[in-house]
Length: 282
Image 1 (cartoon, rainbow, N blue to C red):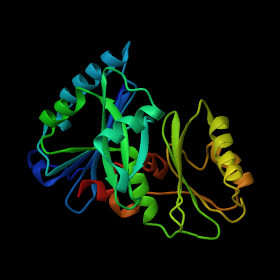
Image 2 (spheres, helix red, strand yellow):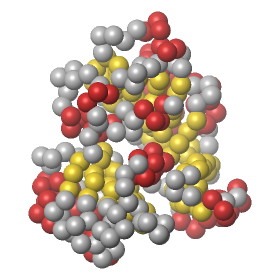
Image 3 (tube, helix red, strand yellow):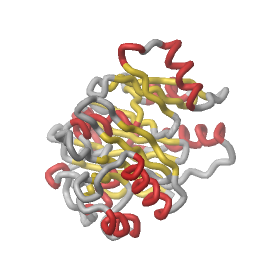
C-alpha cells in the first residue's frame, strides 16, 4: 500500500520544471520527495512493500509502480536517484579501475546474472563506492528520468558525516538505519576510517551490533558520540536501550525550515533524511 504523506498547498503540478525530485529505490519499493527552488519540501511519498514472487518480478513491479505514479511522470529541473542496497564495497580512488571494481566486488558479494555493478566517487572519502543493481534498471531510469544519475545510499551518508567535525581523541560514530540493515561509519583524523553495514532482524539485533562496534573499535561509551539517522525515533526500544549504555547519543533531525509541518511529526520526517537533503538535488 502506498502512502502520499502530504502535498503542500503551494505545489503547482503545471510548473514542476522548477522543482527538484529525489527518489529512493529498492526492490521492495520506492519513496520520493519534491523540493522547490528554495529547497522547501512540497511533497513526500512513501511506498509500502511491493508484492512480488522473485527478484526478477520485483524489478518489473517496481517499474510498473513508477510508470503509474502521476508525480513521477512530470518534468523536473533535476532528478536524483538513490539505489538502496547492502551489496557494496569501497576502493581507494588512486587504485580504482573498472576491472578492479568488478574483481573487488566479487570478493565481497556474488554478482547475479540479473545484476551489473555501478560506482560513485566520494571525494571526501577518497574512494569509489562500488555497488550492484538490476542490469535493466539504468536503461529504464534513463528513459523515465533523462539526465538523472544513480547514487548508492552511502554516498550522501559519507558526505553528510564529513560536514561534521572529526574528533581525533574520541571518534564519533554515525549510523544510518533502514528497514533491515544499517550503515555505520567512524571518521578518523588519520584517514583510517571504519565503515560497514549490518543486517538485523529486530531492535535487539540492532543494539547488539552498535554496542559491538564500540567494543571492537575500543571506543569510550562516555565520550564517543553516537549520531543516528533514518528509521528510528526517541520512543523506540532501540534508542532507549542505547541511551543506557552510551552517554552522548542523538538522532539527526531535518532542519525545520526545509519543510512545512503538515501535521507530520519530526520523527516521520527524519526517516527521509536523504530525500530531504538539498545537496542531493543540486
